[in-house]
Image (cartoon, rainbow, N blue to C red):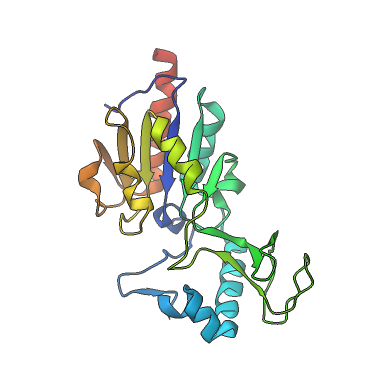
Length: 241
């Protein structure tokens, strides 16, 4: 039986690529070290962007087109329902750069690794919504510079976003859950070690992650099955509290 926190407790949910994989989006890094048949070093590092910006822009332009065809799945929808129904705070922290959590209805959300549908100017640091293509001639709508726009993605070697906000929530949450994560990418893989010793921890994954030993409770299976079932148990427990 799952642990039942008090209804006013803060919950922090970390999600990874396993959530969006069931919506048809490829996981960030396959076992062969490639992402969509490209070397990570070529399309997900600042050095790769400086070396071949045209390749990087083409790569992310195609990712945006793929994302436009994807839809939220029952795991995304269940987590949105948890946020909307849980009496206390629910903070969803995702490693994913897609917008499927938002489209499912989640509002209290941190994108650790940036957002595919946004662009950032390296000249003025302005971040703007950007659902279309980028290239080396794109003009920044903020400062007017040409050729300085890049995907608003945290690449390898760069600092994840809003870590202070996440750390504060981890310090006071009563339950921390990780869903669809590999446990290989830090600092997110270390979040389970940052919570208080009294905090209950849950892993929901297709298979045990690299950090499964750190969780008190585990549910294995497809995210579209395990996440809705786990959320339903939490919400049913509100009435029994």
